[in-house]
Image (cartoon, rainbow, N blue to C red; front, side):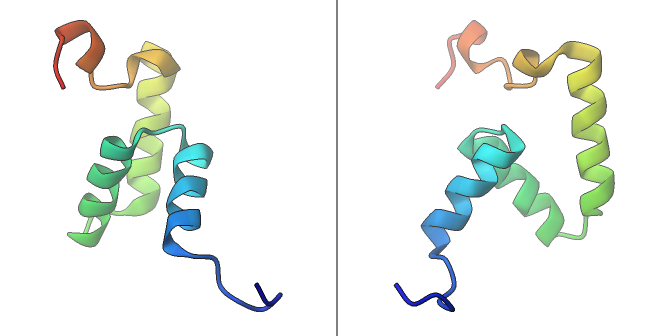
Length: 69
């Protein structure tokens, strides 16, 4: 791959999931909110506040505990 080539969408998505510590569905919700006009900085602030209040492991939608999938 040439040095000036842009990373593929797959690489960008994987990097976003790793950098945000959000799963694929959570990241999809965030992207959708931003595409529909949500302020990205405000959304990031809310996610940080939720993590501080409930802990990083608790901001997972509760899918595992609720038996959902």
